[in-house]
Length: 290
Image: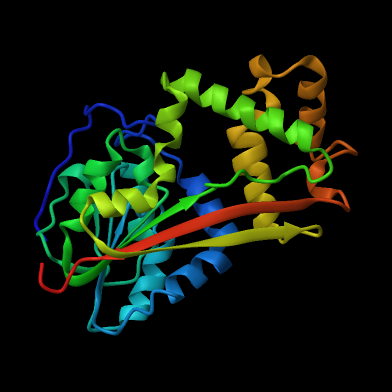
């Protein structure tokens, strides 16, 4: 690894990412919420002691502890992220001897063929050129190494099991909101669905894909309610306010009630609350002779 620097004035990523952007709290909420399923995904990779692992787009650094434990004292787990706040949080969370670097994914200060596994979750969807990003990650693999690309919600999430119509219009409102916020077309927001194609375009072999279901029922764990309320209901939807221009009056009023813990209709305390989200992990390897 080599030292590197990063410009604080570089153009923003597809979803507005810059070194100054900070959504540490949302990342921490997601990892606490999805930890059981993420741990299963990591365990399925069957890392061996002594392996070298890179978490590319490590966010708040929650997975670094898992990787460090898997590879042991003779292995190495490294994190890298674009945002200053995320790097600071990851460094605070990472085990001793686990470096966390700040860099752009397309300009990482890392030597080629350095890692046995590169893990990158909910990251390539932030790139304006996902194919170039995956090729850069693939170049970091040792012969026989693997690249694991993870992405949440390739299938639509289920929030309102009792009202598919409201769920549909809310999902469409979210898509409209992000298109308007970032000046994007629908195709730019869905290109990341082709994880397998991105891996094959990078000339990796033995592509395999597995989708994990994150399923929660009332009564919720504290970590589940915190994520759904703070990161989704309040954060992504703004309690309905962010989606107000894209909903009719009745749907806006109902969504606001469902998002409000002080309302008797609050979704997360309903006896019929049933949440589904998917997490898809696509894994491919670099040939031993390449």
